[in-house]
Image (cartoon, rainbow over all chains, first blue to last red; front, top):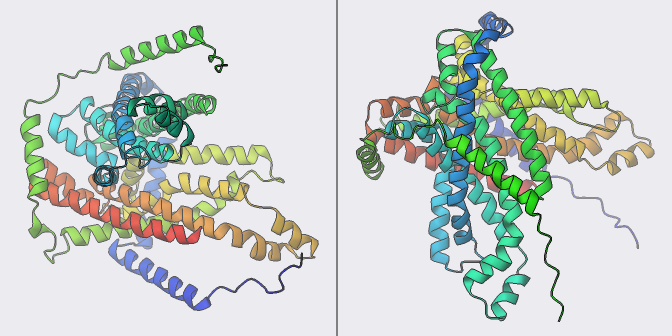
Length: 261
Length: 263
């Protein structure tokens, strides 16, 4: 085979220039809009040094106080993820285009899912603290909604890529819709579902640690308290504790996910 | 007719897993009081929904710089600048954490641990630390976003470096090219599209976090939202939530279509 003699096309320099100019323009406009002032940053950098200096000497006695709310945080993440997953499972089946052929239902449900996914977790928590009051319940509800959005998105994308063969086989041998889901769909996707559930759980553990900051239960309340009292030595012990928990949960969850897939 | 053999029943393993799960859920539900829910919950929910249905349209643009549109623009600006700074700061971290043929495992391993630590450090705590340094406002938000994003961006970058195709590099070396040629003709053309794509993705997430950071005073739309919630002015909350949903959707759409053209 002869190799092609032409060289690959050069990039359109004009186009790249326009993109570059646009980019610089956005940068300048953003710096104006967000009042960036580097001199202020470097002038006050010693302040940062003071904070970091205090953080370098964590208050070890505080660890006893931190453990119960940390466990509460993990509990919130477990319940929130589970609730979200329970609702996400049928929802994902309903919005998969290869299972439900009704375009109208698909579009409406996807629109709802997209809206849910745009709202940041802390913002949900702020709204639910206003609704149900300060405490872990607000955190659990917002984590449930947050994980619902995440799991449903990942899960329906997997359902849409499954092998259609078993579905056709069951339909052609007279199986009902329930039979299709039970014998053709679920065996193909169940391990993915649990993998996404664990993934959402990992993210929720991280997210739940700050929810308390606005009153939604867990360790975040202590984070807020230590920061407002300028006890950075306590802040750093909380951060270290969170880090340890996240590392352990990530390791366990990764092990489980590798076995599942 | 031969039926497929029944899959082996790991009854012992399954019982252990089931018992573990039951135990875990009993533990999880113990000690969390569900009766702390306020009786007003129903009424508040109804007024929030009413607020979303009848939003405070007057707040969209007032011209004094404290209205919805100006603050949404400020939020996007925080995310944009923060992501840009973070992309630059991430480069050295990415090369540190990438496991390449020549590099030592200890070095890349330590880099990966540092990146995990940065990812875990709560963004809100960072924001408060920067507020103490540069004062409340969007600049603190920019700095918080730029430091926090390193944890994820540098991880994605380093994975791109690890998965890079070594073919072009080898062919340039065997054709007599020097290190500079390798960088400009083999490494960068492969990495830059992936880096830009990851940076755009991180920008989408940064828009979400920039809209949260205002809750602690680091600029953007979060500040008026938390004020409106505390003041129970639900029509204001409604219009802000609608604004955030529209902003995030538009940004996701633009960034998503740019990413599709890149890869």
